Amino acid sequence: MDPMIVAGAVACLGLSAAGSAFGTGFAAAAAVGAWKKCYAANKPAPFLLLSFVGAPITQTLYGMILMFIMLGLETSNPGAGVACLVLGIFAGLGIGLSALFQGRAGAAACDSQAETNQGFTNYLAALGIVETVAIFTMVFTLIALGSIK
Image 1: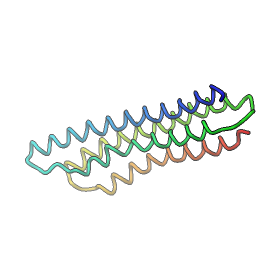
Image 2 (image 1 turned 90 degrees about the vertical axis):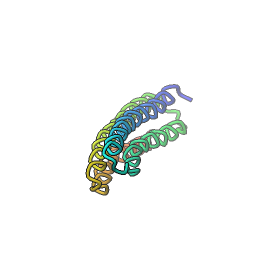
Image 3 (image 1 turned 45 degrees about the vertical axis):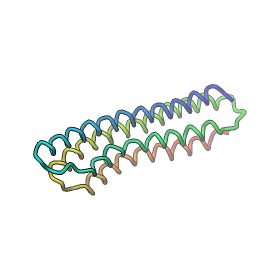
Image 4 (image 1 turned 60 degrees about the vertical axis):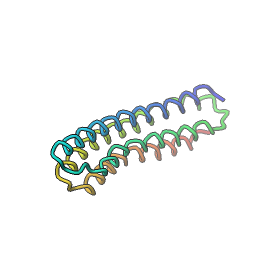
């Protein structure tokens, strides 16, 4: 197997996972702070905040899907390795940034949900829109990978 293909596959997964780590970290910190405010005010701490915390983790799965597709490429094209490396870096970056900013939005959703106990569906919809960037990136990268002969 071409080491450049492996490098592209690992870069895609690594950058996607890094974004998920940042995103879940931001949202988790906000959830803990929101729960603390609830406990201090003798209000019930909403368990629903965990859905905002976990939302950015799916981008790691998108990076993993692309990694497996890249590792499964059987090609004799000498330029395929470079193409996979470039695709892996940019796809991983796009997916990872989606996760990072989804976590930032999830952090705001945690604060709002805990304070008002309203708007859960709206917050999830906003997070879903940010997630769409990662899904588009994965799909368009799969199309580009399909063109490598």
